[in-house]
Image 1 (cartoon, rainbow, N blue to C red):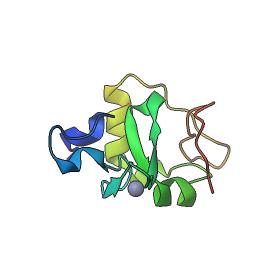
Image 2: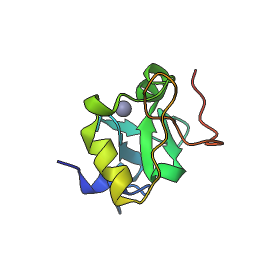
Image 3: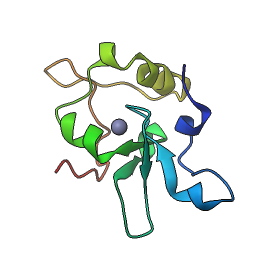
Length: 99
Ligand SMILES: [Zn+2]
């Protein structure tokens, strides 16, 4: 089941957790600022993604392993593209750093 926090780039409101985000791929929590950035926004997908997911999925995301992401992208009206290897392609010009 998709978590509501995941569908939104903004953090939780109010308290010290406002810099903690749900990864839209593994759904784990990670810190994004100040000074410590353990993930990156994927604006075209309206999610935050943790560094480990970005690195380990640099060649795309296996749709079968992440049905909740596929559902989220469909809900957002994102056109899903695939790499030649059949994995979901990251958005073009996303500015993501895969290292
Ligand atoms: Zn993750």
